[in-house]
Length: 171
Image (tube, rainbow, N blue to C red; front, side, top):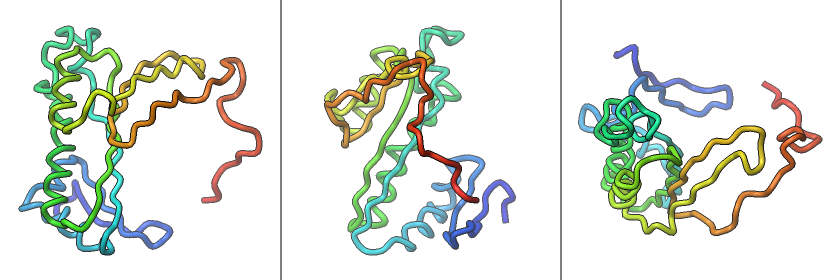
């Protein structure tokens, strides 16, 4: 047993795998991913939401984005297409949808590389700046086959960012 990864049962009785390193899912002939895929009912929909570290992609980094997706942090983007490929090989009956988030200030060549690796068209990427509806500007790019052309709802910046009536989930 490697103490950097383990299966646990959450408070709802769901089996959850925790990994210190996402690549653990693919190590040992993808043993953990095989375990996960065996738990899925036939014709399941798997939604993968992720965002690799963006520090090596942006003009604001030490090397002005030159390291890109080969940098020691941002290289982890490549986990996503690898995960999708292996999961699809393990279970041809499942559908996989992904949402990838990353820096809106990435250099164009890194943006194009992500589109190419994921098999996306530029219409499947959307740049969103949270400053349009919140107190903080933060330009992000979301990549997904599920991208809609509708912009996020506009909000007034000086109001609370949540609707009235929300409360803490009982834990």
